[in-house]
Image (cartoon, rainbow, N blue to C red; front, top):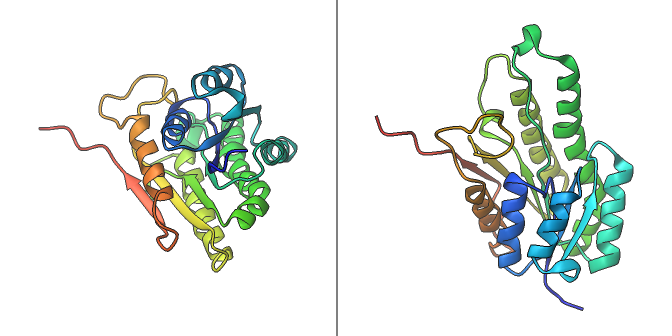
Length: 230
């Protein structure tokens, strides 16, 4: 059996998750990719070496049963998990606090905050064993005030999860990194942004963090697009 490290990525079928899967594959990682739909995951699995290198699983991150099943299958398949990228998330709804669809809020909060917490909780036993690396997709929106944005509030919460779990794990050997992108050109948006980062730019940030020697703990990486020329 291969001794190559294993990275688990939630929201691994598109955007930042897909780009990170490709970058991690290139760096020699075996992959565990989860998403709500398996169709794109199957295609990605085929492209990146098949089932010997890539395990895929349908997962609703709002379900602890789904999340635990992914971890259990990963350990049964590869025997270890060395890095976890808590990346699954969704955007919000226009209208601000005055008139946004509250059901969209509910799904977003449960995905971005509760789902992130479930991923952390389900993966921590394996990361304790491997003394691995936990990474979370925060956002530049979680470091500033955006009028009327519940999405921004969820990303403030992800930052708080990152800070809190880092302190909980202090002395465990597990490193914790918040990846905080600005605008990224992904399927997240209905209309493509004109001045934005590429998903591969964020994947590069992830790979930078995980490639550091064990004594280096990269706490946060904030990545914003260069402002357009005036």
